[in-house]
Image 1 (tube, rainbow, N blue to C red):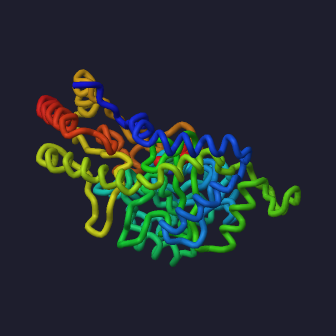
Image 2 (cartoon, protein in one colour; image 1 turned 135 degrees about the horizontal axis):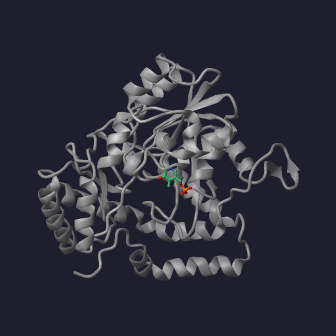
Image 3 (cartoon, rainbow, N blue to C red; image 1 turned 180 degrees about the horizontal axis):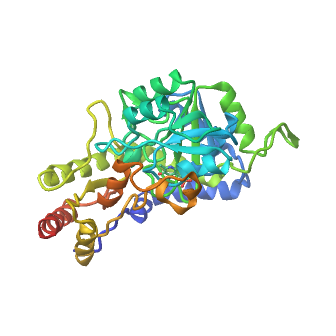
Length: 381
Ligand SMILES: *Cc1c(COP(=O)(O)O)cnc(C)c1O
């Protein structure tokens, strides 16, 4: 078996080399490297796809999250509720703005924020004295959107804004609506390994809120609306013209790639569901499978997942763990004074999850090879 890639970005480039290099060359010869016309064009195309009024291209998913919170005036004394089982960026921006992350445990089936735990957190006021919650950031982990209707209903009842972290779920649907259109604002990331990736960092904010859109456009360019007239303190967080051009060149192939990802996921699930816990996708939703992640139940034997992963590695099968340490147990958040046992489902998930190779071009033979050795490893260990 030739080497199996976890994500095959080089293959994607080889397949679409001509339109992509042409798009890059056009930017190079245009001289408009910052806020060139490709940025606006991409914003228009993606806003239409997501079915929202505004899309604002920014320099990363992290900045997309940060600018949205900044435009709501989130700062010291404010609390922002999110999941402890996500990439650190989701909570990092909260702390960076001087606000306090408030974690809520996940639903063990979807790995996304549990609406029941959210309700409990709000009714029991499970946050430090002196903090006032202002917003909720549900994350669509692995490519499936969180239970947004329920979460938004609860959040809005308490007067909180909802920011959808769709960094892993661009293209996914929830009750026939597109991910990134489901909160007061939604964001995504174009990091190369995300379902829609560019060739560097990039991100986007989506919203129907005119004021928020205008504000984020100003914030991404040093708080200016007109050149050298600064109405507020902003940051430098624009999307590069080059990255917008790469995304526009790749865009025609995105739908087909999603279809292929779904087929790969279905093949995995059909073959593996008897032997281990495969992704649970709600009937009213689709996943874009940013990751295809199974659970290796540790059944009282922590380290079983690591043993399975190392058997796979011996066979040349790469795997990854998203994520090995939940955020409330990260040193960076030690000041929040959470501890082990606070979020049992997130803690258990961090010991059991294992992501398998996932990209649109995995061959049936490669998948059969992965499935065979994964089953063998699970039985052995
Ligand atoms: C990737 C990711 C981010 C950050 O996106 P960047 O573009 O890398 O800054 C934020 N949240 C989640 C859930 C992510 O997966």
